[in-house]
Length: 292
Image (cartoon, helix red, strand yellow):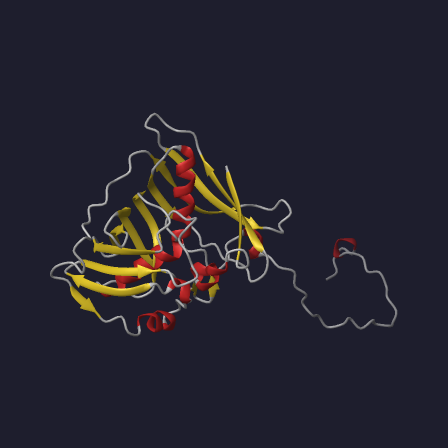
């Protein structure tokens, strides 16, 4: 069992991830949690990670987080779940946000970034990218606007991504804001602006603490990509065998906790005016045979 507390105050950079008017924990943060738990459990690969419900961070206060890792099977694979509840909840239910499988056997990064920009790739103008995303409901702040340059070659998109000054990757496997910004390059190779991670497969982290990276994102389907990440010297950082990205609707960002479906409300009614008069008791029709 791994536990944590998250809030906009304890992790101010999270407030820069605004989707449909709500501050959401990015999908890349769930991946960071899974990678860290895998380190402790002897698993260097996130075999699967699927997001089931968004985690909305309240304006004030925080949320309690639990990541549970199960026992290893005969192949060393372990199931895990991620759940949360408001920190002021007094024994209330836990809402599950993600589940997946951890396993052994990190996959290599098959990406040579020593030649940069890649041969044959065409530079892409990123002007207006984040303004367009904001118009679509993805109002990312400075920490998540890390895309610095991009190129395209067929189904491949390449990017340089960096955290802003004052935000360091130290202390993270791969800073969630850095990886999230790397995924924004999908907008230049045919995918819609403003898609967010839904499910991950075959994720391996090879180096930690990066503040700037080079990325290759290869489109593998209508909603899926493969991702390879290196540092600025071309050394491997991370590999993602498959990532499914989907647009988030307004309904997706609503709090899904069971108690959130209920609220106390008062419904006004007209006052009852007392009637003054005489009353008589009338028997039932059964007591008066033959009369209607």
